[in-house]
Length: 453
Image (cartoon, rainbow, N blue to C red; front, side, top):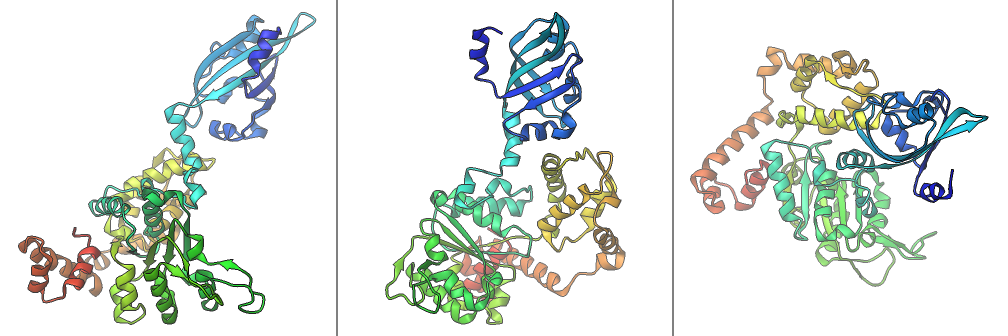
């Protein structure tokens, strides 16, 4: 090997050594995800013939096999090959024969991989928005997978409200995607460079909540140190308070004061600390119910819900089932060591009948579970959780299918009535409220609740 070859090899990343038959003896790579992308494990890789690593690599096309056959080096050869997962791999390599006593004993190949746009899109599925992770987020608006008209309106609304710093309250059942919405708003806003601080209020003991939010000063109680609360930690960014309705009423008053004044005082502190934050809150219950049951203060609600978003349940957007299925199949095909290429129609029918009380989160978990049972690249009815099959069958029965809960019936009637008068009043809030005999504030809430604008 002459010196010019050595100079060029400094640019390469991977080293492959094979015996005289092309079986791998040694492979050194800087990133094991390369093997993962190929659909291989290190222990499976060694000892195998190089042509088996790709779908379309023949003895004639392989640089390694060509060098073993011709006994001549091949330098700076660019190749595009197809992995067993269907992805394209582009590389440039220099391959040299290993000759001892006039006989070819093997070959050594130095290579470097390149990524096409399609490769990069595949790698991004592993990355999970790595750039955004620096601000404590993992989601962007692109993670809201939908073709449902109501959800598309919500995405449009998110883009609009991201331009302001107004408080936002998100309501929706568990698993509907409230965290995704909150992070999407943050990452679309000018605050994306600041921190996104998230807290599930129901997960913190009541006696620790105040110090968690507002921080402490040294000596304020036994063992207390100078500790910033979440308001301070979110300075310059966004504070997301999930399940805000679980907060004690007394603490709700203090929260209201902090949000209105945009300043906090640490426990035991003597001065207010200004904070530059946007506050987003969420609840998994209907805000109207919380207000009527006095579990959420009215003044806090009005301050926290300058803008409102109500997320529909998955059962309200059944047309998204298939698009979500395709999305999660692609997601888990990349994440797991199994590739699903076919789904039985029975599975799709079952998914369409099921009510999905856990919403998109339950749907995602069901797909992941199915991957642990699936065989032969096919998703069958036996692979999905048994409880989904059973409940899906019951929900398909005439008795269940024809019956509607009182709550759903009332909401459907209310929605249709509001649409009728809202349209007749040419979408004038005051006139619509007069026709319905309710306050403008109540009407605005219901319009947002049903995504009517």
